[in-house]
Structures are given as structure tokens and as C-alpha cells.
Image (cartoon, rainbow, N blue to C red; front, top):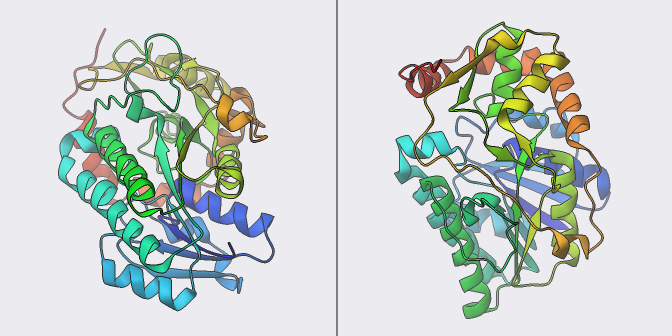
Length: 340
């Protein structure tokens, strides 16, 4: 594998993976294929245009002709698919776009993988496909029990990936990651939302009682896990990626405020979202058997993330001042009741 197509490579995790691969492998060529929706941002790849090992193609993964043209032109021998509609809140507003991108778009990429006989197709998925896990931890063999349109669309994509391995022998792997934090995360997601709101002394809207449990991992650790599975993972297999450390959302918010020296009075409890999963938890023994370990504690990951947003206002201020972001924020939070 030398010529990688990184679908969704201008997004949060995808762009970090592009930087990671180009730093790690001097002989790899990376082609970023991205539709540049609201969350795709060429600023995430700033400076790479001078690297001869990097190329960018503006395209939709649902466009089969464009995908095949790119595969042919750049002699692609591996696909890593980050391209997806990803925000649960948005999926509750407009589920259709999630089905189109996360299921049909995955099918198009798999068809291309089959047609061109590539060495590996890797699907980047989420722990949310397992649904709410109130006790214990999810293993890769567990039943999928998605509870939001986003999670259901990702589960559909995962099942399509497995079907192409079984039916057509496409050499596929899947990783299901817990919540990521770090540079370039679109500021409607909870951690960058809270950081940037706190910097401007705006309320931090916590859903319900804030007792929801999440495993927050640093995005660079996740990229390393994907790299290991891409090169060492067994075709047809799924690998969970997480730290195994759970944090309540309310505690995450308090830690952000403490790092920024802001008062806890900025925390504002609001009406919970429909079907909000209380807890996710992943068993990652299978991935650890390949030699992976998370390099950051949650505290280290959060501190590095906060520092990045403090030092890179140029990146997030123009996003938050844009009409697209403001329209979403008002639509999602404007009508929510503030809880006492």
C-alpha cells in the first residue's frame, strides 16, 4: 500500500490522519477526496499543498464516476473512508443525508475497491453502532443496536463493508472509535463547543443532568490505531478503539472551565436530546493484541485540545461567525428549555 485515497480527508479525524501518514511514511502518497461540506475545511490541510506526496480531489463519495476517475488517475491501492455525516443532533433534524452519505457513499467506495482490486479498504466507524451500554463493555462481536439516525447509518455502512468482504472477497477492515478530541474538530461538537463558548464567556449547554458517560480519546492516538489496523489487521475483522476511561459530560465541562480559569456558573443545563445514549464503553483487547496502546490520558488529551483552540482562534472564529454555524446553533439550542 503506497497510494492511499483518504475519503473525507478534509474533516476532523481524516485531516489529522493525513498529517499523521505523511509524517510517518516518507514513501506514501495521499490523495484526499472530500466534498467539502460544512465540516470539510481545507484550512485543516494548510501547508500540505507544497508536499509532492499530497493531492486533493473535490468530490462526493456518492459520485461513482468521479470516484473511479480518481482511483484510476492516482493508481490507488488502499482506501480509508472517513467520509460521513457524523453529528447525532443533525441526524435528528435531517436523517436523509446521513443515509445517503454513510450507506450509499460507502457502497460506491466498496464498488470501486472491488473493481480496482485494491489491497485494503478500511472503514472508520463509531462506538455508537452498539447503542447504549449501561453495563459492561462492547465487544466487536456484539449485536448492533443503533439508537439515532447517525448511528443507524454508520451501522448500515459497517454491514455493507462486511457483506463486500464475504460476498466479493474485498479485503476490508473496520475500526469503531470512541469520542475523539483534538485539533480541527468542527466547533459544534461538544468539546470544541464548550471550549470556544467558554473563551467568549458564553453558556455551556449541557444536555439533561450531564451524567452521560463518554470515553474521550486524543485524535492522534486514534490515527495510530487506524494505521496499525490498516497494516496489521486481519481482513474481514472489526477493531474497537478507545482508552477504556470514562468521563461524565458534566465533569468534562468543569475541567474545561478549570483549564481556562472560567467560572462554573457558565454551565447551563438544557432539555436533553431525544434518545440520548447514557453510556458507551468499548472492550479494546483485540486492538491491543496488535500492539496498540493509547498514548494520552484524558487529562492530557483535553489539555492539548484546549491549548490548540486557545492558540488557533483564526481557525474557529470564522466558522462560528458564519451563517451555517449560527443557523444550526439557533435551531438546535434556541428552543431548548433551560433546566433549573
